[in-house]
Amino acid sequence: MSVPAGFLPSAGSVGRALRVALPVAVLLALVPVVLPQYQAILLAYGLAMAIGALGFNLLLGYTGLLSFGHSAYFGVGAYAVALMVKYLKVGSMELFLLGAIVAAVAVTALFGVVCVRYTRIFFGILTLALSQVLWSLAFKFFWVTGGTDGLRVPTPSLFGGLVTGGGDKITFMSHAYYYYVLVVFCVCVSLMWVVVNSPFGMALQAIRDNETRAEFVGVQIWRYRWVAFLVSGVFTGLAGALWVPLNGLTTPDIMHWTFSGEIVFMTVLGGFRSFAGPVIGAIVFNYLKTYAVGYTVYWQLLLGSVLVALVLSLPTGIVGTAGRLLARFREER
Amino acid sequence: MDVLLIHLINALLYASVLFLIAGGLSLIYGVMRIVNLAHGNLYAFGAYVTAWTVGTVAAGAPIGVLLLLVPTGAFAAALLGAFLEPTLLRPFYKRAEEYQLLVTFGLLMILEDVMRFFWGPYPLSASTLFEGFGSLSVGDSIYPTYNFLVIGVGAAAAIFLWAFIYRTKFGVVLRATSQNMRMASALGVNVNRVYVQAFTLGCFMAGLGGAIIVPSQSAVLGMGVDALVLAFIVVVIGGLGSLEGALVGALIVGVVREAGITWFPEIELAVLYLAAATVLLVRPAGLFGRP
Image (cartoon, helix red, strand yellow):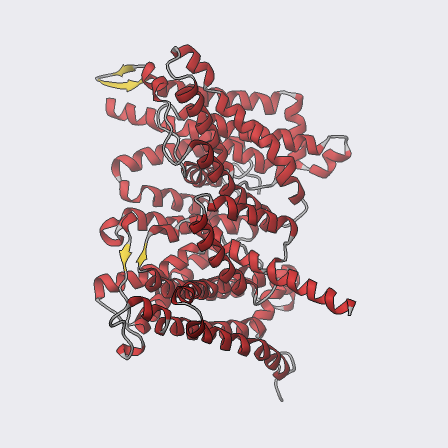
């Protein structure tokens, strides 16, 4: 017997997704050629954060669990890289990514077992408390983690040493490293698209919409939530690993719960009810924060007002609002 | 022996301030089912206002006058709360919890910068009051007298709150609303008014916590965010929405913190967070919470 329809993403839906994704990927690939170096580096930050937000949204948008502790997994990725530099003298980006994935799997598997037993507000507080455990360890064990000074991460070598920083760090970051981040970003987006459109992703959405009914159909809720937690955390850990060479430094700030709040912020900014929402939200948030910090010392006031206004008037975020406007525009025509 | 006594007093000092912050947080959650992430900033706001009135506006005044000015922070926080609840929080009661958390997170960011705007990025102190009280001898050691005042205020607040909630008509209405908002509303309770009152009372407590501790420390940016996480630990251990829980949780956290700072400073915070996570696992509703 053939696989029943709907069990795998259909050829039509793959085609539709590619029709949007391919032009966007081409445009992103043109950025270092067309725009100044600074813009390319800024966008690389945004793309790295987008992977993290994409992972976060597997829990919020698809499983219906609001984590307030995703800074922990971002930090685990970043600190895994920094500790590999410090203790193992590793400099290869591929090994960094591998190390970050292993570390993120280990931490999220453990935290996940604890957290997925609860939902709603208790899930949020539990993830927050556990992320603060890691933050306080990074903060206090300064002889390992450098405390508030953090750990430095030098420019890595790409593709097993084929591409190295060599001379100018800015040129390296805005070209070779930008394309590296872009490739990993494309792989992650494709993977996540397959995950949310697979039977597994459908089961998560069924759990989100009606837990009791999903259990009746035979979905093992606990296990599905745990796997979703794992995948989500690993994506966010990968984002941390890609982010840390760009920043050149990792400090306990990225483990603090307020950074988790920023991850939630960017996801809601883009719209957590859509697949592309967190990606767009993360990139926009990155620009917003960078320019707000550069423009005024009161950037928190600015971002906080944006967040309150957003939640009050545009709860579906950028993507949801754009979709609604587009639909109205089509109706009028 | 004296050292142990000093540690015990220090633990009580922590617990008093923590009870004021966490009690307010718990009261607000119990009545309104909202976890206010900006609650720590109301504590910081109280601290800043008192540091400003005592340390700057009335600097040089006699101790008695300064002491009378301490509650200004609490009243300012209460006023701020009475303004915030109807304007910002009320539209969110019918929406999902995620939005409530987000709007209070936005409020946290806004309040943090409002304080930076009014009082600048440098610490603001009101230490003349603290120093004016002098010190007492506890056995062979000396201990600041002001700290006893803080403990006294914490204890008084606990007793006053208990009497308020279990012995007055307002307390009955508050408890009824917390148990079943619809039924209370059907019986003629003005739920909107109860919400404003509960939120204002919660903010008053947080502001009082900041106001009484600020003479012995000083008001700094970021103190609210730090205090919020500690208050979270307290309410998670004690049970969200339970005042008895907040009291017991504050005592536990106070003792563990004092022991941690003395004997295991590296993992003091980690132990607290792990304790909270363990309580959540064993009794998700906390030691005193309703499941």
